[in-house]
Length: 124
Image (cartoon, rainbow, N blue to C red; front, side, top):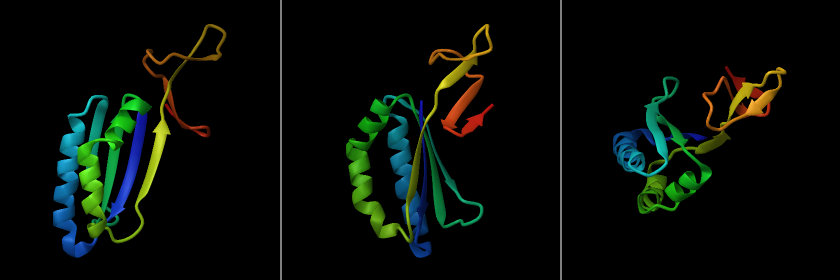
């Protein structure tokens, strides 16, 4: 599974229009093959910052998303509403379980007992 977290700082005067555009893009993205979740939040610390949280079944699904017409249209318009630096992070999440000897065995089909977000970050 691929997780993408993005933050988009918005111009305060145009925030409502930008949020509407982001909402449309999220709705279209949720209908894509391989999209497991596409969530949009306003930051508690800065309500002019949108946080995107996406889950994709595979890297291929994410690449198809970025190649879609609705993403192209969104990327043509959203720069007019941005006030600051956009940050995007991608995480490759794999399931891990222990074998009889206590060693870790990766099994993409197993229920995850732990997920790796990065080499040094494990969520239990």
